[in-house]
Length: 405
Length: 173
Image 1 (cartoon, rainbow over the protein chains, first blue to last red):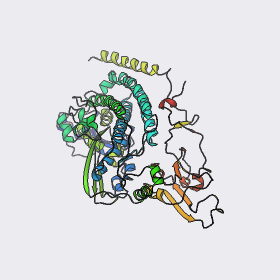
Image 2: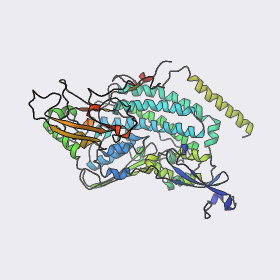
Image 3: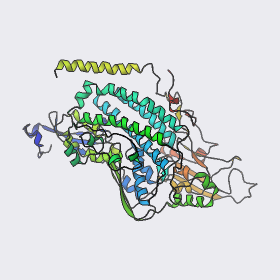
Image 4: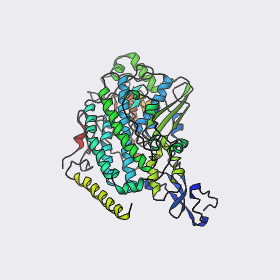
């Protein structure tokens, strides 16, 4: 036990001798820390005096790995960072690379990207909702959430072939066009989704037990949230209306009509309500994206960057040469540096790429929303009860794959 | 709020929640009883690789190493060989072929880059996903394990028709 613990100002009333305090380690095997997160808790009775997150148990050196892979090979690494939102990660990375290459993406590819990103956002929020409710003690929601997520994963599997690691977006467009009959399948999912949402609300929103566990827990004010650098639903739960899809639109989000839900309480309950409303908004965007789908190319007209059409590759010599060159040697990206932020399901996901020319980046860095949001945990947890720690960690919606990278 | 109202409201919440749960009992089930029942995979599903042969039973692979170059996890190992015999005498292979074609499934990430890279459509992703082994060395699959003519297929999957909808995975009670 350390002896020089600084009591936070709001806890000065508990003027107890230090030997009533105890340091315990929560995690890294604790099931409610959503991965291998260890939180060092200094407790006074049941009250948390200090919480220090300890990360790095899942460090895989992904950012360094980018420097040894060609630009197109980097896409598969991004899948594995925030594994609940792989298509969002794909999008951030390919859009940053496209910014450097100055490629124009065809309309259809952009619409499909929006469609998948929003489906993935729903899937990510569903996992959050299920596990968050499970942490707090409501088990049923977990199964229903995973059933809905399964439908989205099937859609992603139908288009890309992968369920958890789709790598569907490529630099300059998409891996391939949508399969036949895809639109009707998405419609089918959208038809069933509102009733599932209604079930979640019946199980949780009106549930007094859930309300008592979440209301007035882990409060953070709007200015504080900005100071901590929170983004995404955590920031909007504190009454700050900031969404990159609206503030700095990309992939044509400016053409879609959607609301940015905000709540003003800044507690776990507010963040729950924001995410639930966000799922409804995402559903609206998916519906609009479906109606915007027009036939057309899904790959940009950049023969030195984008793999040629398979039929063209088998018939035309120049296409075959480009195919061999892109696969074997990669493509040259002009020197320069670029930062591209997108609104991932957890907040602002930014990709920084520095290129010195050549087929491999010289540095890739990710601004992971989970990492920044977790940094506010000490502030949120101060003065909370130990039982509320799981609720607070759950409400931040962290994925350790993205935090440790 | 008093304890009594809390107790009443909590009880109400539990009853309401149980109502939702009970309403699901007569509905269709989503759970698949794998492995008693096959799992449905989508046509584009990326499973264990298949090395294809052409209509004459000849291996399509010409050992151009493009799949190995495209692979982000560097799991493909090829040794190329030239067959000097005349086309009439050759059986089963092309003029240039892969003498050794290994995929290390301990490294493979099933990204599909090798399939995209192959100019001859010689390698594709099959649907086999049951790849667990007792010995780590067994994860290294050789050409015999990969060739479409010799690969052992699991009975535990079913490929959805390309226009089949999501709900095909629902099964009636």
